[in-house]
Image 1 (cartoon, one colour):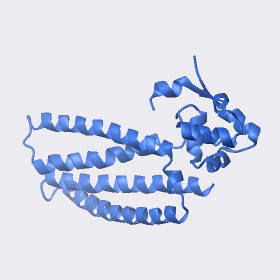
Image 2: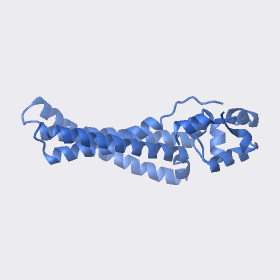
Image 3: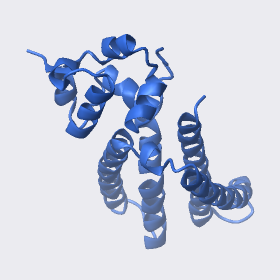
Image 4: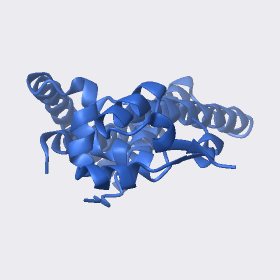
Length: 72
Length: 148
């Protein structure tokens, strides 16, 4: 993952997580990663794999394309 | 603090301890190779070698205990998640570049000073072990900004 990739992918993870009433630690446990990973994805520092993106979308009950989007 | 966060912190602590101990141990041995007997620097190197070696053994045993704990908690896959694997790969890649630069510096140095091959190899060993460990700890540092 390059910095360019991290810069070009946006997400609405924080909002979706707040809607679901989950903490970062609870979401991390639900998808099988560390809290730090959820934190870095939320802050657009780390670009998740397609598998993790799909798991996050399933747990947050949100379409993956709504959760993640390409920045212009 | 949840179990996973505690395990991640413990892993980083053990890695930091092992990396520091290895650095002190091997740097002391390197100093012994380059210093004459009876000097204060040699005495300091002797003490550093003993402390570093003992601490490294303790850190290695602690790491072994840590791996058993991770297995018991069935947390291996979580603490080695994709972000951790990414940090590790990045640390190895940058560590490799640091090693190439070190080889270049050693290669240039031998033009000016008479260098024993064992000294150069030990210097490379120190960089090869401590650079990736330090870089991994830096890349995987937790900002600690827990958001509810």
